[in-house]
Image 1 (cartoon, rainbow, N blue to C red):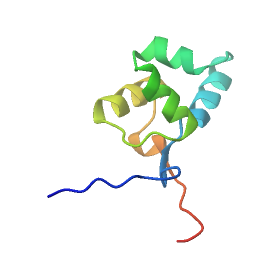
Image 2 (cartoon, one colour):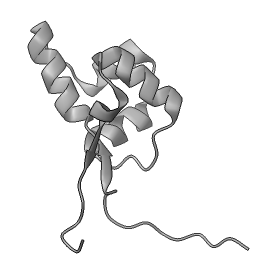
Image 3 (cartoon, helix red, strand yellow):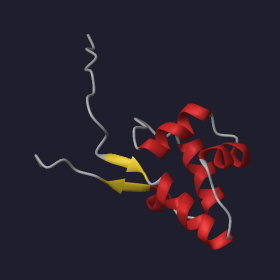
Image 4 (cartoon, rainbow, N blue to C red):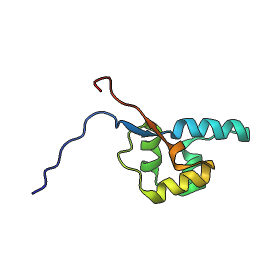
Length: 87
């Protein structure tokens, strides 16, 4: 029997979407918004928005691949460790 646990707070591993958007915008001399990422990658709004806010709970491989292609980066560059103070 499986039990569902309610996950509280932000995840310890987060997608660095905000930082990658800033970097790409600086390189390309343009403003990259969440709507830009959605339009140019085809990601669903909720996925892109949650990644931007740092609240995305899982990152499917096809989403990671789209982001890596868009930002011209390796998968490790997509993620950041944000461990809580308790650890």
